[in-house]
Amino acid sequence: MHGMNEPRECNCISGGCDRMIEKSAYDQLREELTRAKAEAAFLSKKLAEATDATMKENERTRKTIRELLGEAVGEASMCWSETPKGIFDSTRAVKIVEELASHIEGRLRLESAIRGHMDALRPLLNEWSVSL
Image 1 (tube, rainbow, N blue to C red):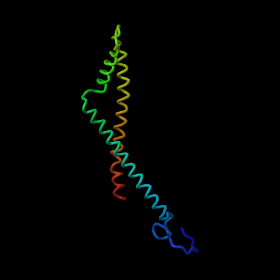
Image 2 (cartoon, rainbow, N blue to C red):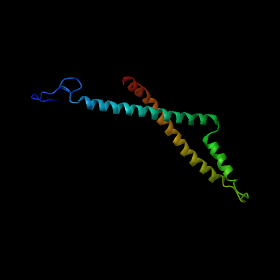
Image 3 (spheres, rainbow, N blue to C red):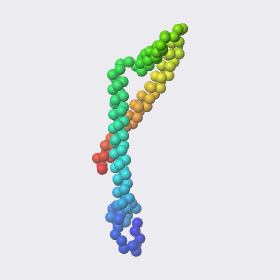
Image 4 (cartoon, rainbow, N blue to C red):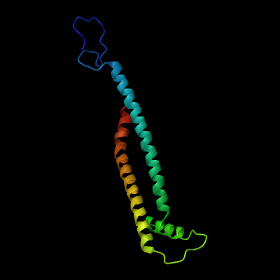
């Protein structure tokens, strides 16, 4: 607020002395908000594209993660110049598949949750972009 004895022109947002934020500070905050909204929209779009690509890839394969990992572990067990002798420990192989599948499924749940949050933010981002 301006002092009573200051004969200078008011530089407040409202054009009167009832506001504490000056126009330059307000303009700076508005520019920062605009940049932040643009960055959030860009990141939201990139995340949605990446998630959609992942989901489409998953839809192409009708097999479950566990089936794919089981096949990969089985195939990898035969990657020797000479096939090993002895008994294949399928219990151990199943445990490897289960651990990998649990990890991957956890990541997919996280990606899905992030996408859900981003979808929830879209209306707010759209509202911001319209208000600017």
